Length: 109
Length: 109
DNA sequence: TGACTATATGCTCATGTGGTCATACAGTGC
DNA sequence: GCACTGTATGACCACATGAGCATATAGTCA
Image (cartoon, rainbow over all chains, first blue to last red; front, side):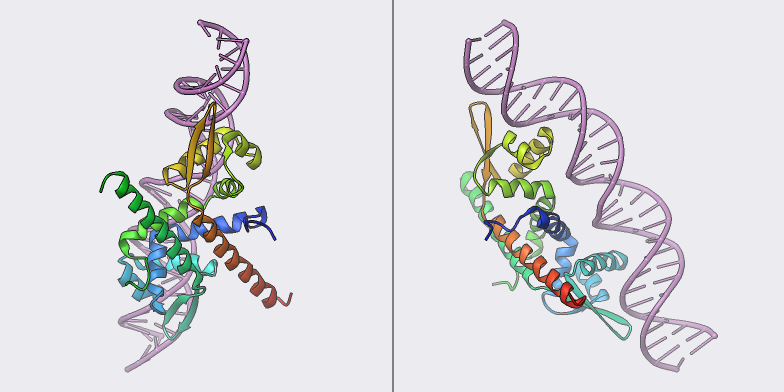
């Protein structure tokens, strides 16, 4: 069993996954989808971005299997494909909080 | 307690963290550092990239507190600042493996 | 000081991509 | 068919940034 899962074969795939998540609006969309399925219009309102922009990011997220899409009537309902993304966010948030704490301590906060 | 940690305040920071990790060479560097501290030269050899390039990415990783730097003699020894990054990679790798499995099954592999 | 090694840093270029706009396409109801 | 709503797409721009090169800086040793 390898010590880490970052063998060169996976490396590009992992980087790509991270890169996909490295866009605030996409995180915002995922965060909204965490509450349940949403239409494009819902997400446009929730994020305050434009419809084409949201739609494009949804296409990207869909292409990388981060969300699922279901057409019902006139609307497209998107939902999170793999809840594991939120575990990622939790870890990162933990990191950031920790870093901020250290900074506060370092600057005598 | 919020359901998710992705409140708007953290959103940019989280996205940035992901973006930093979204570069194959940087992952390669971190993967190498997982084994222990390394000099720039070590990393240049390990990654096959150029010295300025590795150095620049190390600067980026350092600026975002993902690695630590310690100058000893003529060399700069870098090491992982927060091992939690590897948890991230584990999760992502898990995701990817799962996705590949599903693909194989879908295509009758 | 001078030669050498190790590392960092500008400069430049090429590329990727997020955002915006206009517009096309699809589904619904009349 | 026609009007309307919802979604996707293509063209375009602006910007960020990864990579390569030359070079500067810093540390070591004689």
